[in-house]
Image 1 (cartoon, rainbow, N blue to C red):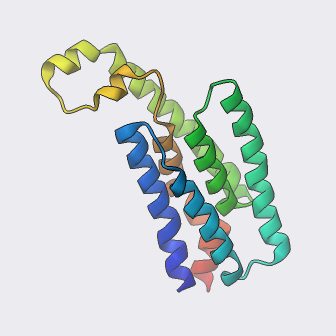
Image 2 (cartoon, one colour):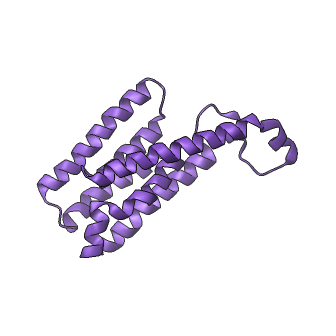
Length: 168
C-alpha cells in the first residue's frame, strides 16, 4: 500500500499541477496541500524516523524561504512557490533535492526561452490557426509549474521515498 502511494501520489500531483499551469496559468492550492498531507502519511509508513521527517520539513522550509523572497520581488508566482515547497518536502535534505532544483532551473530556462520565442511570433501563430493557448502568448508570466513537474519526474527516482519504496 505504501509503495502504491509513493508511486502514484507525488507523480500524479505534479502532473496535475503542470497541466493546470500550462492550460490556465494557475496551480490549484489543493495540489500542494495534498502533496504535503500525503507526505505526513507516507513518511512513517516508509520507515522514516522523526529526525528524517524533520530534515524533510527543513528542506521544505529552506525552499519556502527562497521562494518567498522570489515571490516578494514578483519573480515567482505564489502557486509555483507552494508547489516547489511541497515538492521539496518529498525530496528532503538530500542530494536528490539539489538534483531536483538544478533540473527545475534547467527545464525552467528552456521553457522560458521557448515561450519567449513563441511570443516573438505571436502574430504568425495566431494567423496560422495553430492550437496554442492564447494566454501562453499574451501573458507576461511563464507557467513554471510545467518546469517543476518535468524536473520532479526527472529527479524523483533518486528521492529517499522512492528508493525506500523500491527497496522495501
